[in-house]
Amino acid sequence: MSATEAVTRLFGTILSIYIARTLGAGALGQLAFAAAFCSYFILFADFGLNALGIREIAKDKSKTGSYGTNILVIQTVLAFLLVILLGLIVSALPLDTRIKWITFLFGLAIIPAALNMSYIFQAHEKMEYLAVSSIISQVGYVLFGIVLLYTFKDIIVLPVVNLLTAFIGTAIAFHLLRNQIKFVWDRVNLTQIKILAKNSLPFLISALALQVYYNFDKVMLQFTAGSETVGYYSVSYKLMLLIVSVMGLYYSSIYPLMSSFAGNKEFEKLDKLVLYTQKIIAVMAVPLVIGGIFLAKEVIVIIFGAQYYPSVFQFQILLINPMVIWIVYIFSYLLITNNLMKDYIFTVAAGAIFNIIANLIFIPLFGMTAASITTVATELVVLTASLYCFYKKHHPDIVMPKLVLNLYLKPIIASALMFALLYILRDILNLKNAFFLLGTGTLSYIIFSLAIGSIKYGEIKEFIQNNLKG
Image (cartoon, rainbow, N blue to C red; front, side):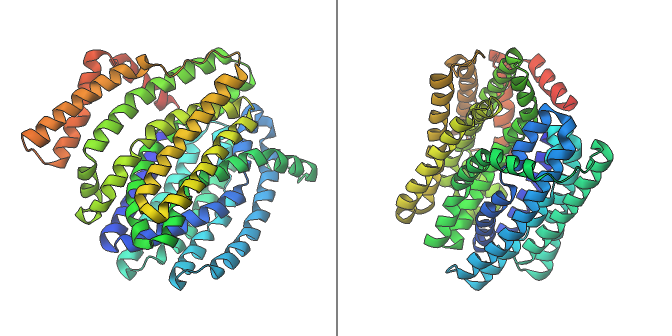
């Protein structure tokens, strides 16, 4: 899963860099708006059924055929209805005709997304097959996209390439399901379809809330400030999401395991897994926040070019988000796997409501700076609500290790030493080479962490071995 995420995110970032450097912030903003707007339709096509399917199949793999068949029926019907609805809404929006076409063509990917059954690989913890379909689809999209962009110099080719490669990825996933998981179609069961639709609603509502505070800011910026501003904001936002995804896919890979532990009431194992995860967060997040904020300008200029200097301040604000989100993930998955869906919905709904209100008030006044601050504040609201629901309301049998200072003290010390070294090199000795600073910062943090015992060689070896086995 980590390798898949690394490859897909890397190639996606390469495509964004190419667009930003060759076609400008306006083109990048148009694509970002289209993706943000269509994400809501793709979400409704999913209907929360993929997450439900992972949880239920992980508990009883003998039901793979039954769940897979009936989930596909629901999602296929929804996808075609949503494509029609998307066309009607886009045609009525007060947008440039070109942006309307880009958005609609991008939205056609709803269909292959609904047909893709890759979630079954996650339920069976067969991540390598998910990797194959995802990597081929993403790499094909980027490579063909760059070739066509170079040839036609027009952003409108990308939604078409995205649609074609999405169908290819879906076909590969289905082929692997039939041959590796031995997936067999079951009969369509209307009773089960009704049960699935009902049980997936909490997942749908929570996913909708998540999409609100991941994409509502870009939609608002498009209508209030235009595509160029969306492009500048997207540069910082994409880099932030790239960092978040480092742990995001780790969580996706342990979600079936957490479901299994919770379902079988193996709370001691679940407790150990959570403690292990918190340790990883402390070691990784603190230097990313401190070092990233200090070197934000260098990172933006290296990757996207000096013309994207307006994105630097937004990137510095958004760099706080990965640490908060990674902690939020812990409690979100604990609420889900322990069937505390009402409380989980409460946490994400609180974040969505706050995000909508804050963005509606402040984005028209302060633009993308307001969007950045609201994004971080939203995650803090969700974290507060999650902590309340898990600790104050339920007091489960599992003894959860709290986020105490001793988990973060040594990473903070190591990061402070790294920061001091970088400050001396850049601002006193006037060494400005960005690659040198980034490399020195990374290496010095590892050395300082090993020296003070924040991380140990044995832990690094164990982490690598565990993930290679996974």
